[in-house]
Structures are given as C-alpha cells and as structure tokens.
Length: 414
Image 1 (cartoon, rainbow, N blue to C red):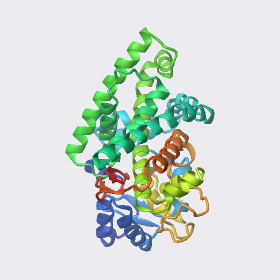
Image 2 (image 1 turned 45 degrees about the vertical axis):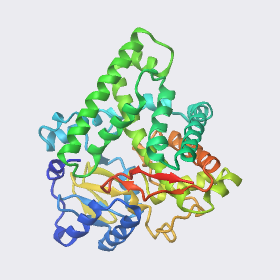
Image 3 (image 1 turned 90 degrees about the horizontal axis):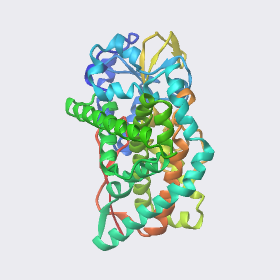
Image 4 (image 1 turned 120 degrees about the vertical axis):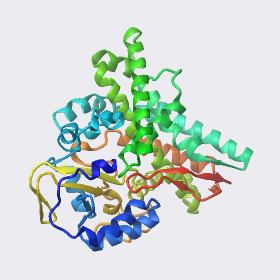
C-alpha cells in the first residue's frame, strides 16, 4: 500500500494518534519476530484499537482480528472503494491486477473469481498432488541443496529451495509449459506482492508494476497457446472457459502462493537450524512436522497484516466504528495474544492446537492453505532427513516492513 493511499483513508473516531505515533513508527520499521514481539506487547497495552497517523486503526487482539476477517460487513480495499477514495489508482498495474483477484474483491465479483480456484484446490486434489508432485519435488530440492552444502560448506536455502519450490509446485498443478522460466516467474511474483507492504516507496511500486505487466503478458501468451493446442491440463480448461479471467487466476496463484509459502519454508528452515532436537524428533515422529508447521504459522505468519474497511457502522470490542473506517488486523499480534496463547512469545511446537488466523477466516479463507501445508510438511521432513546437524552459517537477512514475513537470505551449514 503506497503512502498516497494511506493518506486517503477516511477519518477515524477522535483519538489521540500523536500519543501512539512513535509506537506505530516502531511497528512499521520492525521485521524480526523477536523485535515485533516487544512492539506487539506495547501496542496491546495501548489498547485494542491503536490509532495511526494515517487515520486507520491497528487491531491487536485475537478475537477482534478474527471478527474483522470473518464478518462479511468488513470489506476489502476493492476497485470500487479505490475509485471513490484513490483517484488515479488504476495507473498502477500491480494494484489494478491485484484488484482483479479474489484477494481484493468482495461479492459478487469475489465469489465468481474464486469458484475456479476452489474447484482446482479441493482436499482430494491437493492430497493427490502432495503424493505425486509436492513430496517428490521437495525431496529433490532438499537433497540437491544438501549435496551443495556438503560440497561448498554453506549455501542460501532461501534462493535454492524456499522460493523456487512453491513455483515448481504450482507449475505442476497447472501444467505450466516447460519453456517458462520458473526462476524469472518466482522473482516477478515476489516483486509484485511488495506493493502490498504498508507505505511502499515509489521504487518498490515501480518494480511491482513492471512485474505485474510482465507476468500478465506471459500468462496471456501461455493461455493463447493452450486455446490453440489444448493438452487437457488445468491451464487448458481455464483458457477454454474464460481466457480473461484465467490470467487473473494465474496472478492470484503466483502472487499469493509463492511469497507466503516461501516465507513459511524459510521460517521453518531457521527453526530447524537453530533449535537442537527438532530435526531428530521429526525423523522419529514424522507427524510432528505438522505441529512444527502450526507453531511457525502462529509465531511468524507469512501475512502479518490484513487491511479491511467497514462496509457499515459497526463495532469492535464494544467500541462503535463508522462506515468507511479502515483497520489493519495484526495477525502477528493476534497470535501472541496472552488471553489465548500461554507464554505467547515462546516458540513451542508442543503447545496444544489452536485455531490460527494465518490463512484468514470466513469468506476470504485462503484456498491454497492445504497446498501450502503440504509443501511445508514435506520440506520439514526432507530437511530433517537430509540435513542432520544443520546450523546457520550467518544471521538471516529480512525484508523491511511489518506486513509480510520475508527472510531473503538464510545461509545453512553443517
């Protein structure tokens, strides 16, 4: 979200944003989950709704965040909202592209655009894909990475595994042509989604716009070829049914699926390389991988912030809010809520299961959640098996900003 967009948000109820300006500033510049933990506690102490200088409210409690995600009266910053509040927003191809995806749509557009994705990502389809595509690919990527670490002494697992694996899995799901450069597609997907970070600088927005245009042009070429020479894969069906909509289905899958899953895998790799005993336990108890994935989704969810606008007068936590009020639901803070999670700042894969918000709730629950989890568990088991004794060769490098968990470099040694 650009600074210009932030300043166009309607007025919030009268609150003293000056008193919390420094705290909000620290939140916006934090990225490491340990630093964010301190900020989350301070935000929670400031109240369930923390005013920002751009007249939005930060929502910190679990129950309140869940209400924002699940209640249909809360709307996205859709194309119609932006037409009213952000003149000229359509000049940004990345923002315009995202508003053609279910990520930034409300019913009925959201329902229609989401339907083909739901059909392509049913539990049965994902289970079959996990066995036939996800697990073999994860094993291959991790095995090759382990060989490289033994050969070179250390290597960056983000560039070698965490980022390319989700793209390869989506390529297998879709039937993406072999001539498509998957490394290029990964880089463009990561660049485009940065436009969603709060107050993205102009250089990031320009790069996101270039990535959106390049991706859509690539998808158009692929779909045109599939219409002429169908092969019976998912791409062929989408190209035949709705070529215009299909380009945005592809944009949805790669812009939403690649960055978030890559962030999850990188967080898991860091945990396995820094917490003794995790890998050995997974080798003994393969199902423990699911517990580890759950705790990583709690500890540092890939998408830490969800922005919504009140579609009608409403309330949060007993406090009335007017129609048009913008809120940022802090999923990272909700997952550290001490009223729900015991000792919330401790990373503990053994904690009892809880209903997490990492993949949303209600109408916008992530359709790719099962596929992302399949990749995460396969990756964790492969890492534990192929990289015993793994350790960090250098501290992780993180992308700045509070909205998205994104380790950009994580060197691993043995």
